[in-house]
Image 1: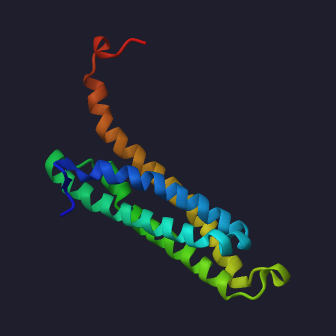
Image 2: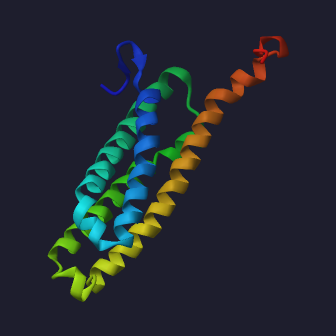
Length: 162
């Protein structure tokens, strides 16, 4: 199921979606954690982005495992990237919880954010930073696994001239 689409390996296609949407979801998470007013206005977009990104992270993991059977297992990449969907789903849960808590609160212009919402906002910001780091590590290890052998076999004459 998670191997090819249109004859092409699914993994590199969905990885790019995850690599774009996860940082976008983190940026949105930071913005709604910063201002509850923005959460009330745009929170549903951030929640949607975070959950779609987590879905792509899961599909990337599953399709990567299927691709590894065919092309070989890049052990460092696998050891890092296998946990990324869990972090993505955890972050999506935090964003959803923050969105929900801000809606449960009273008039925010007078009373401010509730203590639980403030704690979840801080947790969302910290989890977003950790998720960005994990996305970078997974992407870097995957790109290294793919491109290092290719670049090691490239010759100077094969390099395009400017």
